[in-house]
Image (cartoon, rainbow, N blue to C red; front, side, top):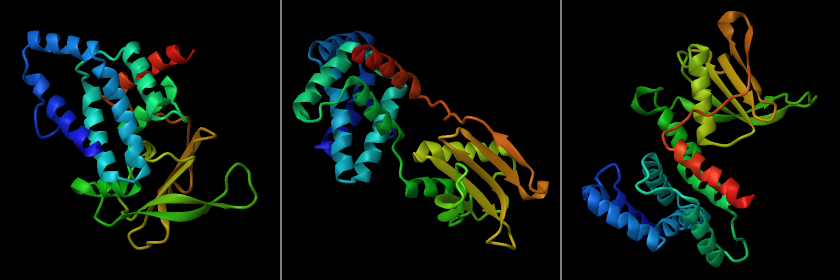
Length: 258
């Protein structure tokens, strides 16, 4: 079902390989088609279908489907071919209440689910992306468990740490923050820690950046600066092209759930 829906959506709205059928219509034809979309609640059906397809694919850990859904949904949100209105979100909520009678989602839950589709990623894909296109050397990025002291605790806790085995990695604070934000966008954690290793000392760290989400603060540290760190404040994710459409849907959901 999910594969078939994605194929239909890619044909109508387009994907990276092809221009969708919608964009081959002239303005008059698009206006007529848009009226039919709204009249027959196809906008509501599509919002519900994207949400439900993601739920089905996630339950099966079908990452290939989730990535395909993610690619389509991001492209769609960058330039929605029809207005995203409260009526469509209300219609999607009613449709999903029939599909999920024991766990009917609110309008806000639907939008949160749609936002997760746009943000979907896996740790393995994130690491592959870091090593693609000459970003970092192949095989240089790994996730390791490191002990750290958090929240004034006497006993250290083990956290996931991104270790970049490349001395030239994030040579300045701006590059370090950008890498941290990229990880935050790919994976939701409550603590992020990234270190680099030296060329002649694969176990020693030459640079470090960490960020505690709950405390909304972190630090950037460079060995060459004799251990002096730079304090980091609240970290925000970078704004993406699909965010304005999601923000519009969030605003509508807040009104509907009030």
